[in-house]
Image 1 (spheres, one colour):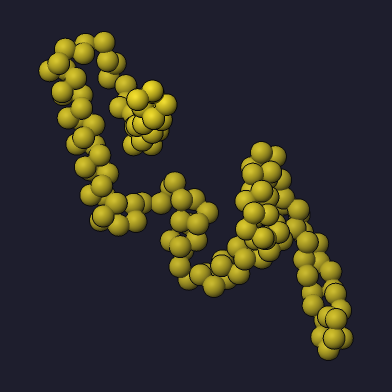
Image 2 (cartoon, helix red, strand yellow):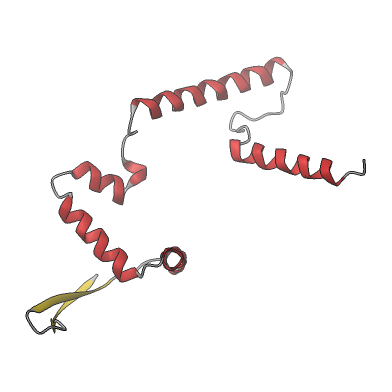
Length: 136
């Protein structure tokens, strides 16, 4: 990343604003997707970067808040509730495999994962649509 500084005159000429320009590289697909989100919300990339820098300054004494923002996947679970839900999901996964074994589904590999909630929901909606399209 590179930076450069510029001094700008405020419109009312009462004070000068020193600005810095930043140039950074990022994946083109990420930039395009991020720009689309910002545009949809009515923001520019410059506004988003200024907001990030403001957040960093305002939370400079809260290292965890900054880490959660920058590296959400590397931070520990945020709460006991999240840990409880994760443990429940793991128990469901174990029970699913146990039931598959009991029913004789020997062809399931140990790496096989049951469908996600979203996949099940999509399948349910697809079935409902098919039923609605059937003649009465």
